[in-house]
Image 1 (tube, rainbow, N blue to C red):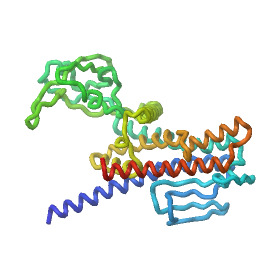
Image 2 (spheres, helix red, strand yellow; image 1 turned 30 degrees about the vertical axis):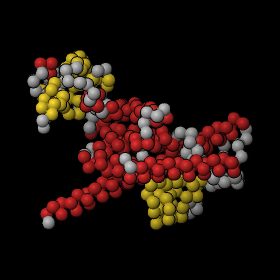
Image 3 (cartoon, rainbow, N blue to C red; image 1 turned 120 degrees about the vertical axis):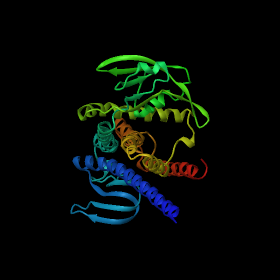
Image 4 (spheres, one colour; image 1 turned 45 degrees about the horizontal axis):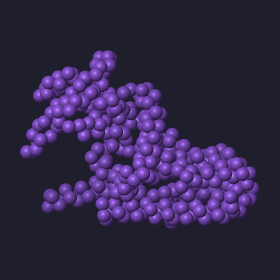
Length: 351
């Protein structure tokens, strides 16, 4: 009976993690659409509807100016609908009748708001947890080389690579280092920068040999001021990592099992939060940056491709056939949705 109650409680807890992940993902998407909406309002675009979610409207309110605000059934998206954005009709109020530079700003603002939110959430991450650098809490002197480290030392680099959440920190950098191999650590001791060389040594755990450093560490806290100064370069670092991974996907370094759609993302967030809620502090700015980078890619139906069409129109002095452009974006949207559904199904039933 007691074990059954524990199982039910665990199931409800996991459902709670999933729901929280959905709320966070929807929040990130809403920030993106709010960027389009804010820029559109500033530049006097006519906006027909701002929607949180897709599908059937659960709640709808029409403002005096005719704008509709709605909350819809499927919480995996949203949109900001501009007058005439997806039609060939170019009346004076339509999206495509506006100056190209104005449309570029509106299209770019969704990703821009995502990136701004990533900076804000990075400040929170860096303030609460740190920037990935580790402070030595204890030293177990089984290995003579470990004695070169002292309690209170702050490890900033390992084998020349800066410790960061994005590369897994000390564990991520040294996970492939073999027992007995030298590891060069850059440390700060009493304000002085130093280099020490340590080694992994062998210990027996559960009948098997594993490599250990013989020390315990915790994240080095930084001040709120330092967090504010580091948040912008940290966010750009995340954006660069996203681009690197996309490039590696294109050259075949990763397969379909290494990527996922919204359902896979929600599952990964739920699993990470079940280990520690602090994982959300890293996941939230990472998702925000991913949304910013992804939406600026020149893939039909995404903001990046729409910006390409606007730039071509601006350079040519006339647009590409609107019906053709809309068909390209429609086909692109169908392919994109089909792809994310495919990878989610593969993760659910194959991998």
